[in-house]
Length: 383
Image (spheres, rainbow, N blue to C red):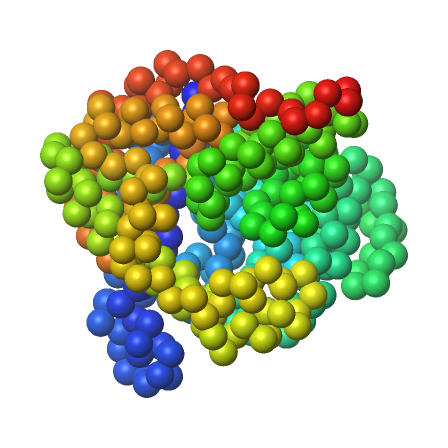
């Protein structure tokens, strides 16, 4: 099976200064964070991984890529064999015609390498407010942007008339190099139960961004493929995000996984505004009502360890392989996107983990057939 890598580009130690708008310099500069993760990104191809994935975040210390397509365009020029993917491109923030052009350019720069476009709706009010976009418009903007992107991938000349976007007859140049393949590899990440059938009915694929338990994702795959079966479509398999610490001893790997997962989870809560004060805002924002149920719930360190650290891939190479093999069986993953650096983990520790994984685990995963397992098969027989 295929194995990719992504990084967080996260300045976790800067939250207190950022939230207080205190001014001055961060404890660790943003430039140092970027230097470290650019260095690690430069190892991905040489170590034999198959793909590189990037996230789409702005404004806060949470994920400082400055835009996923810009970031991947840089990586396209820096590498020669890696496939690339977005996890995810947040459609409501952008002009969809500009997105179509940027994807086309990236597709051409890759010169035949595979580009997977994972799509999302976004959930951080800080980002929506900064762009002057109302969160309640996110689903409508997302749906219209997806429709525009599909038009651009299937027609040389097209126009669009919607509530949020109006595009006169136009075309995308350069023309897409691999439009059919990009269309085939459009994928969606979701958290709300309402989003799953929308994506499945739209003929899209799945990206699992580590927001649920593996058992819940197993049920999601079955439901997703059940919807596809009702259309007479073949089942599909997801790309799955997993955090990994692969080290010589179980104890050291667990120390790193537990410590830095707690930090990463705290960063996520800070970025998305999951506080009690935000519960009413989520409840009154169309399409985001489900976030009101978790806003204000402060997870203890023990809660985070149980829900977000233990289920990941950590330990010795054999233990990491066994955990990933189990996750593949649960989710029917066709590809993993592994995160080797999160929280305040040092570049050296992340590199040590990546190198040991590449030597001892990656060849075994490349030999593993990514099967669609029975528990993830369609839940309906209406074919």
